[in-house]
Length: 280
Image (cartoon, rainbow, N blue to C red; front, top):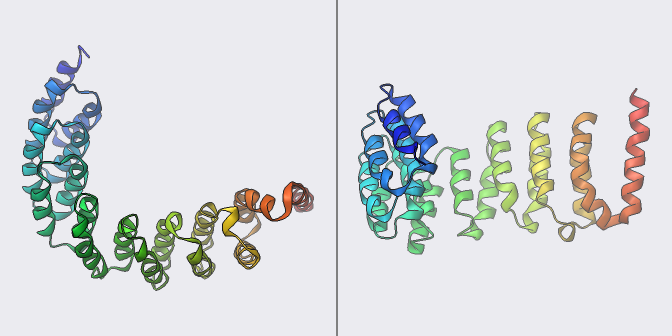
């Protein structure tokens, strides 16, 4: 700790702003409260908005209440909406006294995705903002970003998950569709899993299909899987080449035990061992 003032002075003296921001990011978790005003001033003095945002995001969780209004003012002064939104997201959980100002700032963001994201971050503190955040998310024209915004709102509005899944299923670009399904996988209720699996099976690129199937399988619990869903899972895995199938297979162990007992798992392992000898 005795070296931290020197380290901060050294960081403040770095002429390259990108490197200065990186130094502040590295120091932020370790600085005592007495040094945080200097660190915040250093971050505010960075002219490049991307680097300034990175430094502010790193400092946000550590700032005392007295410095939060100054950090918020700095965030509001960032002209690039993406970076402004990023800083507001980081500040939102720590702004009990200035949340109304943060909300006003969020509402003024023109970029739909950034506005939806920040409103979603503020939603736990302002439940009445949720309808506005949802409307904003629904209005995002880019399909993947729309899904991402809806997923971010899901913990507060679980009823949007069917809509988010429908949106993901309708994404024409397969890479974005796969990313959207991966983002949704941990949040989907049991009733939506068959639709998600059907959508995953339709992804042409095997690498993307494997990733989505693995994420969906990870979200399954033994109690959520009945025989039709089990058959659907196996059909999805059957579409993979052997190496990808083997990678995904261990994820099924809890389900195999639930449906067939430990003996079924032993038989599965033995069958894989037999087949592996055939491949040699």
